[in-house]
Image 1 (cartoon, rainbow, N blue to C red):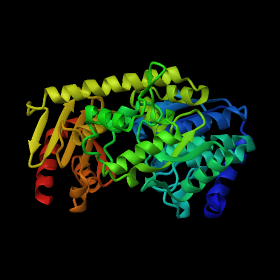
Image 2: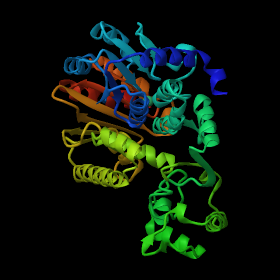
Image 3: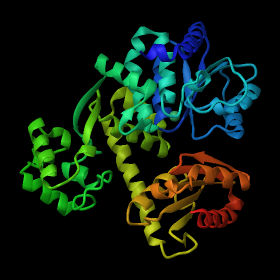
Image 4: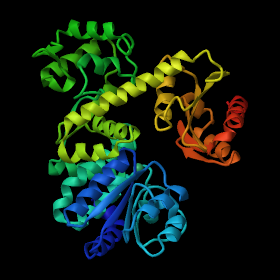
Length: 455
Ligand SMILES: [Mn+2]
């Protein structure tokens, strides 16, 4: 099934694998630092390691000429493998790695030019935005390297989940075929149940309290309400001195909760569906958030270790540090809501000018949380944080109604970033960009004016 749709892509992977197998030097892997990139790096790690090919991995949060020059300078490998990144920078790669072999396994829009091996769904008329992740493409390379590499398929799906390649809770295209395949192979377990976030890792109370989509009046963001609802049903919330998670419940108990929700008039349809469990015991969405957290904490190598060594103490440690960091950034924001240098309000929107008070890796997450919580629940939010000496990173978020009215954040970010000598893009409701730091003030002004004009 998978093969029918993507014969040419698989053929490209076969050719790349052939050349890789006959290579006797060391490989430099370059990966994006988000969940999909870390999943791709795990697959690359294993496909090389199992074939006895020595390698080193570098993680980057973006691949521009400057970053590339830096890695090229410190590396002396003759073969480069870019995963979940690279397709948009072909020209630079051609130039800077002229004498080296360049392999790319990516799903971003390809730029002009050619490298030795370019695996990308777009080159074969397959939409890489929805149908396959960087990890998925890297997996195609792994599976042709060795039959035994098929266990790596689960990471292809972790990557797709991290890139939110789903529609109405369903994987599409190649991702769908890969998920079917993974379930058939027993690498992923599919079951039906309550799709609450935190199913395996949070207490039942927290899983309900933090459910915002759909919003459960009286339960969402309301711990006493959640506790009361659950105790009325008569579910034991504790077991052996600890809190039970949804995954600890028996099927009968879970049905009682569903029944209780229906009786109370909640719309359970959205809450029920397919749950995917990895063989390490994690639910796939929770595991992909964990890998994203590793990237944002600048610890992508720990993400690889968690995958390959099942080091769950390390996982808990990262989750705790990440939670603390988010907590401290949110406190900063709450403490400065009245300071117009930090929070500039306009119409039903606001700009968060964080400078170096919020790490640029996390400005997107903080902007999202601020908008979804009661901190800054505005229709349009834009967050700015210093990325390095010269650049500012920007994240823009808009509520669905705004997007439906035609104000799309990806278009706005592309237009405004370009106007101020930067670059931007992304999705309709969530987009980002990067501009020179000295243009920050002008950018915020222009953002506010444009939003006011068009919304
Ligand atoms: Mn990706």
